[in-house]
Image 1: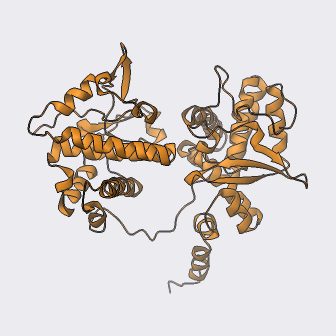
Image 2 (image 1 turned 90 degrees about the horizontal axis):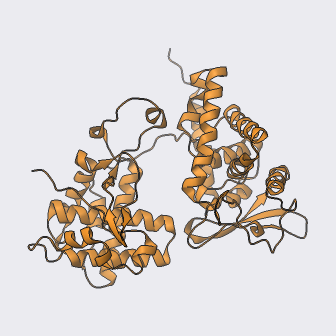
Image 3 (image 1 turned 45 degrees about the vertical axis):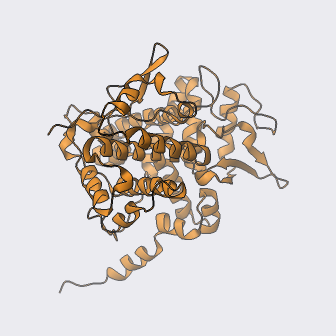
Length: 416
């Protein structure tokens, strides 16, 4: 049986805070269209209250992640399972996991789209939006090869995120005395799609050669067009200060500003960062990095070094006011990655440049941290700059001490 076309259930957090279904006529009609599902509106309201709670108390990233999972789960309940979630047991959640492992092709999109579009003082459903997204490798995006949606399979991280979101949703409803059990928590241990992964992890980073191409391209673009000073500053900051792209972007509850650079009594420079888990940390600022900070500030006609009263955006929009979003910052970095890949392929071949085609902004954080490990920096100091809760995390991700010992001890094995 062909499934109905899904529609989005929840807009952004700011729009959710005072949402009026009359402003979303298609959503309103969907919630009331089935006389056999009088509980559909109640479930939507449960999701609304849960997401409003998440939006108030968690980060913007967490809200977005939980909205995706709540929306997908309720859509499956409404259109596929057609059974109230407070009546589901472990088997029902495992059926949902089966559905997420191989969703209908018609429910899979190729890009992220806004859920709703403004239309005459109301909001219309964006027809391009789909609950699932097939993420294509950058090499395939840049080719004429047609993507095969039938090959969609969620990654292990996506599966974990799915269960985390549903478990949190049920937990919230239990605290509100709406549900009296958490079948998702029980089902997670029996999900057949989880793999116990004991592989040696490859760090997603650039080689020193690849990083040099990225830096040289950014410097070359700046020499030709001074507006690229911003791009150069972003790339140098992500790599040298080990930042996540979100930590450099304008967020609902935090705006990175120039005054967040500060100098202590010993003339050491630091940058105050609002990171994962809504935690503040201070990242040490190396002396060489100050040259990139100074040139970017001169481009913005500011004094060489920041002061405590400069409540201006750390990375400024060229047009408009305020800081830049994660999406905008990603575009700046991606342009340089693409140009560096093109140049390196021409000079050193496709294999030498391959990782530049796969790289994301987060690779710059990994690249900077890995180079610090190779330089011999103390693990404790690096761990604090990275914002890791413990040195064990830093060791597992970047040093992999035990794997190195195992590799060294295994080299002497003989065939004959």
